[in-house]
Length: 125
Image (cartoon, rainbow, N blue to C red; front, side, top):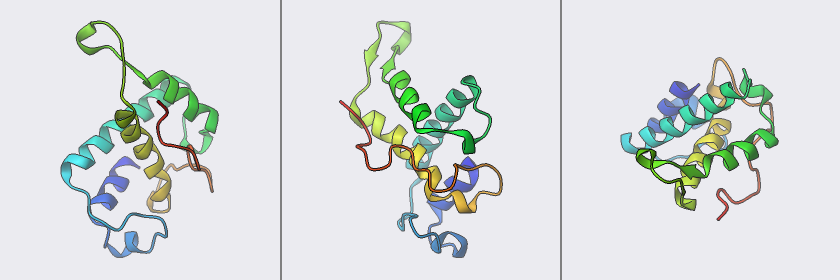
């Protein structure tokens, strides 16, 4: 799913991507795609650790718990620090992006009509 989503981000005018109603229409650069991939990897690893095996099982409660667990960072094993809302927005948007391209994905995807944090701010301060 991550591979298909990242390819869609880089080639938004591809015929299979262009027909998706909510997909962004501007091409993403490799640096942005790297950030999205890192955020997706963190999300997928967190879900696996929680025993969630398929994206179709993800609930809003899972999203909230992930967000709460993700606010802290331990740089260089030093003292914990709270991440900035801007950093959290990157994570949240990457997780939401999976919804926008779900129709492309040949394997796993969120349940139909599920959007993490739908209608809410992407990061809470």
